[in-house]
Length: 209
Image 1 (tube, one colour):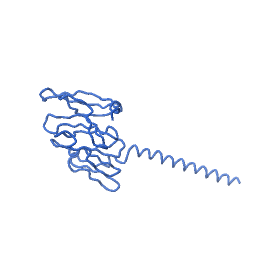
Image 2 (cartoon, rainbow, N blue to C red):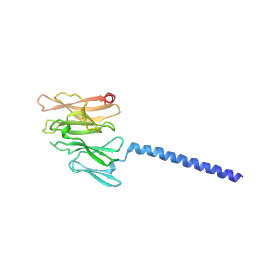
Image 3 (cartoon, rainbow, N blue to C red):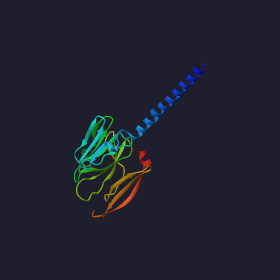
Image 4 (spheres, helix red, strand yellow):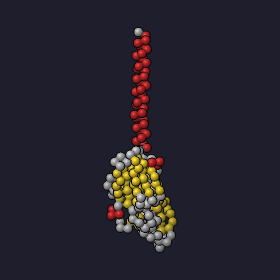
């Protein structure tokens, strides 16, 4: 009788250990994958302004051989965005690669923006939107452009910052609360500029998207 009770207790102990381990693997490992996503920098082969590919379990996907910008990974880790081509005095497009569907789409093309304007820099705002600096593609005067929010479902660009004729957004960076901007402010002859710093509250932008 005592041996039977011991076997029952041992079986119950093993059951609870296995149940706990299974719950841990199912919950925590899945959570880890959802945070990091399937795309990581070690799977990307990027040769500056010449070549971009991504390693998948099924093989290597060549995404560009036409002087692309350095790709940026979405916060969820399942998408890549890049400008192609990114070249002096050339109009490019924003491309979006979706890992789950293994599809590459031209998200924002030249005919969706002002004539002779091009994307110059992009940054993920969240998993649904990109921030893009779009400016004049030709000549030596333009060092940046206007700041746009690009919907990754539709590709529609929306200007999010009003600037004067003598100002261009040159660089952008994000933190948890703000979009930080470096704005080039030109003199009246467009010969020289100085950098001024501004910031936009993310909460203010979230209210309109």
